[in-house]
Length: 558
Image 1 (spheres, rainbow, N blue to C red):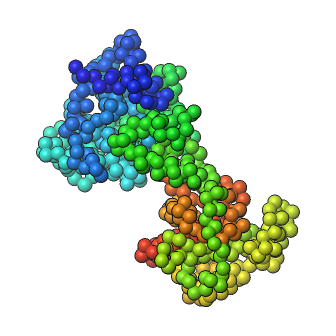
Image 2: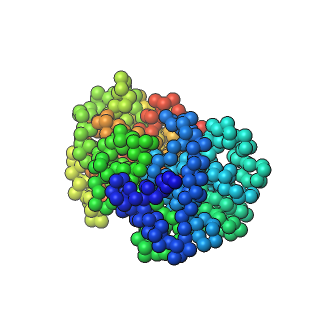
């Protein structure tokens, strides 16, 4: 009888399949339990393992080039589900009640989990089985559920047994169902969970979903909590705690016969740019993950430090930090493609971004002028102001730089010890007359509200922009794209160069970025204003409008 579960384990341990240390440990655990598990009442039921492996042959995939094709399990996938359903305890019930699976993006985690859920719904023999695709948000929960729904719809045989609704798959003869569920809906309590498929656990801000699903299994004889995820960055998260706990189990420092762990990723000594070891994090390499895709990600990451962390985390399963430098100085310098002459910009259309400081430091007004023939290419004109007193303030560790930039004409001053917003307003109005200012973003802070109203009264199209991930995710990516393509001509402005070198960014679990002023090494207002200007440019080119244009300015942050 074919035992593909054990074959994979042997191939990994023998070095026939390249794998990271944690996958090797998972395979050694399986082989060691085959030899010694009987002493703990454990045995491996090949028939049970093959039953679910064979079940997958009835399923079809639903996306991209694989749409409509049979779900052919790869060896690592057979190893995962063979372990989960093949191992039994002395009571002849499934051994593993909890599974932590950490695999890089694009390696088929969600479809695999969806298939497991359908097996629980259709072939497990469980009466009144409740299967949940669980996540923090409705959208995330629906991803896995939609995979399962499409698999049913694609199978003439299975669709006869399952009643399919928008948010429910039901098997009436066993009174069982499969549904998406999220903490957003506040519907986590009172469930009698047979299987919980918890997606992207690295995005969970706390253990609420995991704990609620676990609590719901108390009345089940063979429940399964199946956690799937990429690597994350938050060392206080439930994901990190389960990552660490899984490592301890694999190393043998903690014993838990009910916890299964399979974690891909690059090892500490590996060079993430070396193609030969990419398979360690991507066991589905050359199947659902292409080398071309990974090469593109690595190429972009080499030129953009913030992209490096995203690529390491999502594509190579390496835990990173949330905050990191954003811009490679060499790449920034290579975008100095010509002198910025204000006289040559007269009459050209432009888009603005205004980042107002606290009253005692730098404020930035930046305009982005797209090339008429190639809107991707922009010229950047920056106006930067600070109170005059800051040039000589002993508490200002940058005062010598400020003084030099002021002498060179790159940093203007307003009288006194606080920024003069009337001076800023006057300069914006002057620029609006001199150039063809289409519209502008302004940060929606309290001190900006009055200035916004005054500019609107003067006929300027002003849009409010929050400082959160939602507002910055798209323009940050657009900025990176243009910068890497050498399409942002900043004319060598030394203040912008300094700020570009200072910028640190924060990333949410989905890889969305926003500038982090608190973590940046110096001032970054000019770069923030530039991203805000690019946001307006991109929206106009795409023909879109901001939600703030439709509902007006508001003074709360996203």
